[in-house]
Image 1 (cartoon, rainbow over the protein chains, first blue to last red):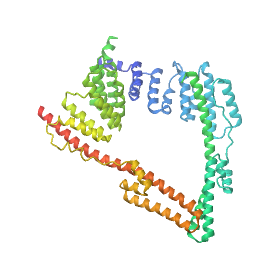
Image 2 (image 1 turned 60 degrees about the vertical axis):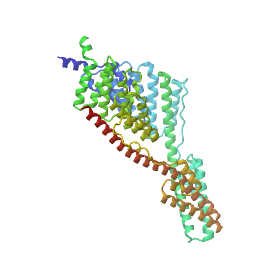
Image 3 (image 1 turned 30 degrees about the horizontal axis):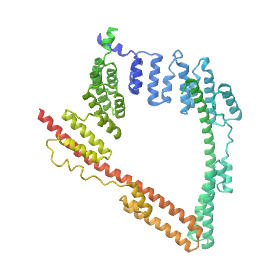
Image 4 (image 1 turned 180 degrees about the horizontal axis):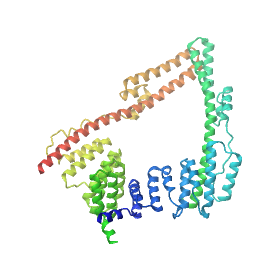
Length: 267
Length: 279
């Protein structure tokens, strides 16, 4: 009788104890405790604490599947769901965020945030998989204007992509110019000077010592290596430039979302 | 309600946790000890529960969790002996978690006037290990002197323990040597061969510059020789400092291993001496 009663009491969630475990940052114990109780009973609050214990230990990526189990009857359901999507986007789990967003519904008060998240998810996926068009960017900026005029949000800009082919070709004609085209003028200048120095050394050795001298061959070889390397480097720089601009756009989208969240829930 | 009040109490959880410890279910036991702590009505129960949790977490090697948990007990009014035991465990856990500075804070928080001789010896032993890890051998030698009064069979071996400390090198000096004499930085860090190679490379680069200039190949000398010399020269300075760091780490680790073996033997002998005397 006593054993039965003890085990029944042990299975009751004690939320003061849960909060205490969070206070002392013993998330592993919180996870075990909530797991033990979830074997016999379930509730949204219990699932919430369980998800929190996973979240604090392993991050939102692992915890989102537990947050997804919480029903919309939970007191903080819609704000919590939007926060989960927001944090998934911050950790670059875009597809997981989209899947999560499709399962939730929010109150009217949070609809602007919901729309902004929806727009952010779509843009981030398109930004990763292909290119954002001028129409996409205009639509997003209009949404920002209509919802968050008072916030200092960052408008998106259309960045023309740099051609890998043209970057390589420019560097083949004038060493370093491809890098300058790819948005790295200082590196371009350095490469130009290096190429010019090696060319000058090779020429000097050729003029003073002839073609067959090992120094002429060595410096000529070095120049050839550097010259071709520079062409490859410029093409690579153009590719990197495009990726950087994509990253910059993604960061702006995430920052705008963060501003909107901070504005609504406080920092 | 009454039943709940009776059953959801600290002693009940403590008993369950002890059972789980006996069956090696350490994580579940740690949770129940924490529950026992939470529901405890006095500091005696709290101290016992926390000590139990530490033992459970030691079995799962959660050393960081132990010392971080113990950082939160400063507001608790435990009795002095309990606080000392907990801080001792905190220091041990922090040392095992490779946080010697944190370990030092814990061990220095243990009250200096300990009545229990065995606990005093253990505390000093841990204090010595922490100071050794921090390369504070002078301070460790002072602590050893305090410990010696509790070692009735002391011979002079203990006093000699810290007499042959390793001579650690100065990275600044190594860099200065490398700046003014090519290769001397590496030689200062006891890497003679590497120092010779650095010297040859830098002299070779200078020789090449001079040779090219004598051949009136100024462009080759300036754009070929100078950057090569600069790379060897600056690289040699950086390398000297790195070699000093490695040398110091190797020497300190070897010395600390030697100290640890000696200290463990001294302390174990003395603890056995106490236990045998009390039998």
